[in-house]
Amino acid sequence: MIGAGGRHAVQRPDSRLVRVVGHLESAVLVVILGTMVMLAAAQIVLRNTTGGGIVWADPALRVLVLWIAMVGALAATRDDSHLTVDVISRLLSPAWKARVRTITDLVTAAVSALVAWHAARLMIGDRQYGLIAFGQVPVWVCESILPVAFGLIAIRYLAYAVQHGRTAVRGGDP
Image (cartoon, rainbow, N blue to C red):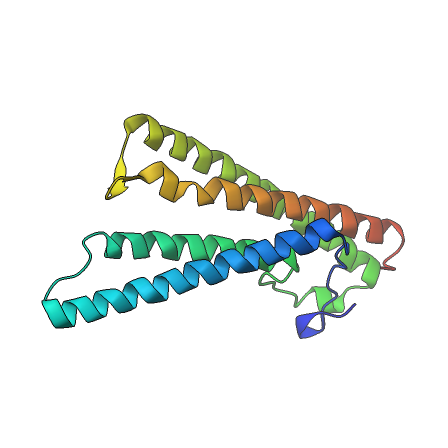
């Protein structure tokens, strides 16, 4: 299967769970983006008509930018469509390309797992200190997307490593 930019995309299992998770990620993205647009529009209208706005809207929008970025990154991993530098891979045989992808998938999974671990530690520390982001919303709730998204990205890239590893063992045949 050829993906964007002519590179081989990973064939995803066509299971119900994969489809449900994909729809859930897309729905969360739509809700976050819709909330951001409505909240920002309300701020603009209120500032222009009343001279003030919603006190918590600006910090909430900053948090929503973090959430949409992380859920968007997670959605990009769903189709193995993260940015890649594939100058060298264009010169490789399918078997070597699969070997290289296995290694990069494992490195990506390891880095993502490490970031998830440290993000969880940050979140737990902020929860213990009782820090508040805005209104009555604790900082740890705002940060909770970090360990979840990076943990799921790590799991997905482990699955891709297994898939690419199988392709490498078969000599590059998908």
